[in-house]
Image (cartoon, rainbow, N blue to C red):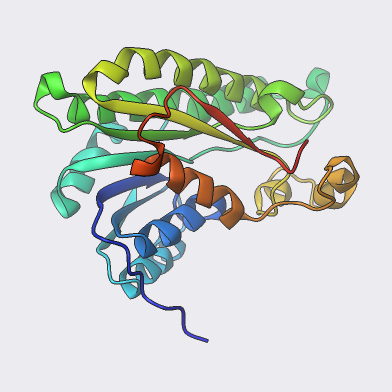
Length: 257
């Protein structure tokens, strides 16, 4: 059955990093249905990002796929410039780009892989928030806006024996979210984070642990993994006027775990 086009009033432009897959792609599709024009940021596989753009356009909104390595500050600046050239001023940002590295015990970890995870997950989010703040801040001529960062339940669970460096990278996201919400609030910019728990996406296979969902499901009080759309919905709420007095919040979406 064909999906109905969105009926939401136009909301302006949204940039989603990591928008070609998993939670990021679910955010892009749902955002279009709710009235956003969407810039789909991606690092690889252009055809996958363009398929998400097709879904955005099928919902009646404008979309554009833009390649960028968020760990490169100059590339992030170009990403924001291209997004605004295509869609106009950005009023919303979702920082969904991220990776875990291969699952293994810490004593067997690869230093270069750990640094890459920190560079993409933590530094990349820092760079994107900086570019967004420069454009949205009222003191710089902006109209304000909303930022949602992707944290993880790993930030508090620690991911022992799997990827503690990933957990550390997401702990940094929590601190960043709290600090920026206080610094940018007077500029009209709300900053929040969503911390997903066990979610059914390809991130587990990417970590070399395709059986991870089955192994951890018994630890989830609701008895199942979540879906990408079940994370996307609270993200869209945090971007919305319904969350106009919500900032500095780290919202756990983990089935009770």
